[in-house]
Image (tube, rainbow, N blue to C red):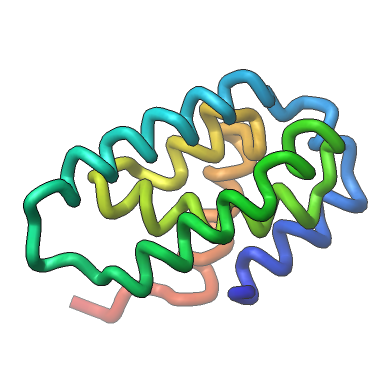
Length: 124
């Protein structure tokens, strides 16, 4: 698990955000991303089959615990598989997090500002 996703899992466990996640929307997003993935892969020879298989396995393994049990760790593992597929089909992963209620627009803005302070732009 990446450090960013580990931090997200820790934050989800310590906050009340799990109560605000829109699980129906999350399921619709998973379905839509998987449908677009299958459409894009069909007939293509330039696909990372192992990466795709890993992502699909991760989603399959953690979807029920994330949605039914509202398990923060399972949600983060689900996102770990879903985010690469979202990028593959051209979705913005930040939009996915906001649309499903995992993060709010304000939290994303705070995070972007924090990253900008840590990594200032080079002088012109």
